Length: 84
Image: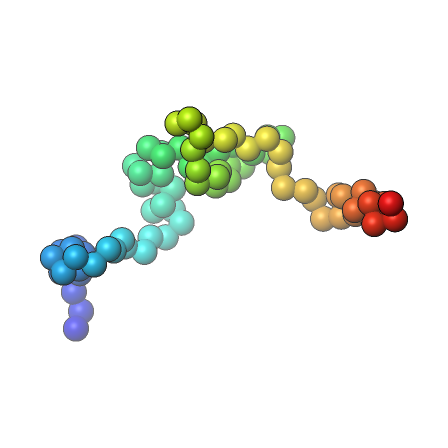
């Protein structure tokens, strides 16, 4: 049986089953809810955005402070800590 997304959502809603459509990445980025919850945040020292923490403290979403480490960026520090 083939039905539209809207049709399936109506049926699931009527049955009391929580649901949401699967969306492509571009659709998620363009969705008004994505902007409303301020989930995409700029990554410091880069030109990209990333998904922020899905939590709020006192009504504020914590901002990203650092980009993800580059491959091997902290290897020396980690290995040095193992010898302490």
